[in-house]
Image (cartoon, rainbow, N blue to C red; front, side, top):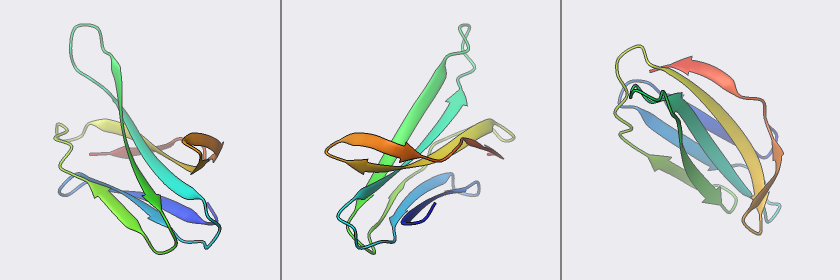
Amino acid sequence: MAGGQATFQHYGEILTASDTRKDGRCVTATIKWVHGDINNRILYKSVTACGYGTVKHIRPLNFDEGQWVAIQVCYTGGGKADKCSKWQDAVA
């Protein structure tokens, strides 16, 4: 997505948000996965980078090997997402 990116590094289980545009907006990277409990809940974690050149990480996320995850990046302003990418599948 122009202006920012989200990445997931499966080795070390690191989710990264990067703000790549001088536009006064923030970039939020969100990862979701199915928790293996009896209810198969979908869980979410997010990280936000604000300011051109800012990179933020969250780690480790402690997924099982081979766990399905999906990643999305959104532009945010005033605490609200207003433009988001489609969810992209990945494997932990």
